[in-house]
Length: 440
Image (cartoon, rainbow, N blue to C red; front, side):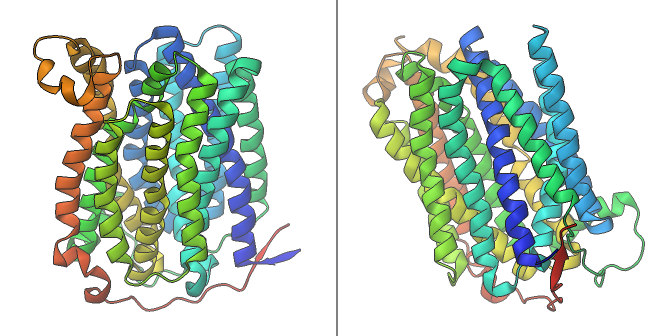
């Protein structure tokens, strides 16, 4: 039967949401497994580091391939590769061979496949969804991420004690297979090449997005702001699970519930974008939200009770879908459709460039510097602010990262060249959106 392109978008988004729930349940289950087994933050940070490293390595290639090849095949290959990695993880768990090396290796390879999908799907939205519904579509994509986080955290926290890590991995594998089947049965439009019709070398195409963004400085500096924001957020949020386990005396259900309350903010933020379909100028909201996030992060470091911490998390996560959907709408409006794969991939690479460093630093700093310093003579200088109990070191890390984020990221965002991006940067010529997509 034939579905309109936007209905195909909805169908793919729904099945990918279920797949995200499965993947995040597995990720959260691994975080619980590692922290309960080792009592350290560093292994959790290692998983995040290798996943982010894979993102950085492959995203540039993924952007080139999204502009060069069939986007449907790229997306289905992504799901297939992730499903194989999930099956290998399940096998290692059943064989009692789930070592840190295997977990790190599978996390790395799985993210290689996962990162293939994002530029292809994001670039396809421009042709699948009419311009007047694009803010809503981007809001729904953020809603997908928020819904998956909420349900994954709550379900994983409860199911972990019932079905163990193996059960979570099986659920993840089934959702991958479902999502892959829908993508294989769908038609995803590929735009005609009107901007760079000549055949370029892979090296030239890998650098194309950066060269284009450098020639369009407002976009480039917006990417810089996103890069620093991700670094400071990663350093703080990598501590989220261990910090909540400390506050809850290693109660996994309570930890998942509090994180679920926090990520409900992402759900509300995504819903607000979905219903509030026309925000102009978008950059005004972006500048406010990106600065306010840093302030909220610093406030989170002052909180040592579970209910209040959940409320602060709620307020922080409200900002995520708002920022992401508005920035993506700006990019889809300002970047020609046939080069969006490469340019969006470059934007994502810049946003992720120093994020793994934040993940890699957070664990050792918490385990070897800040937490051991609690209660020492030197700690007296900050004890009045964060206390002398277990977890005080992690609270100080959150405060410092929140303040630095407000200073650096807010400073970049309020510059006129970034703040007035929408009015100063012209739109490219519009491209025709296909009328239908076929589900076979």
